[in-house]
Length: 58
Ligand SMILES: [Zn+2]
Image 1: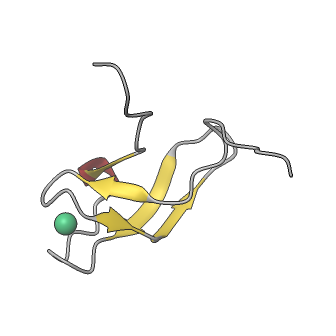
Image 2 (image 1 turned 180 degrees about the vertical axis):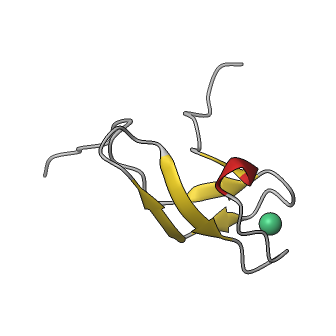
């Protein structure tokens, strides 16, 4: 039982356009988004997505 959650372990991206989690994406070794696709709004531009940040404190 080990938790390996970190910046390098991204399970999904969040679409900036519609705030939908997107699981179809590629990232390079540095954690930069190479490609992504949002099935909700159809966006496929990497710059339209972001890595979800830890949500706790503001
Ligand atoms: Zn979207």
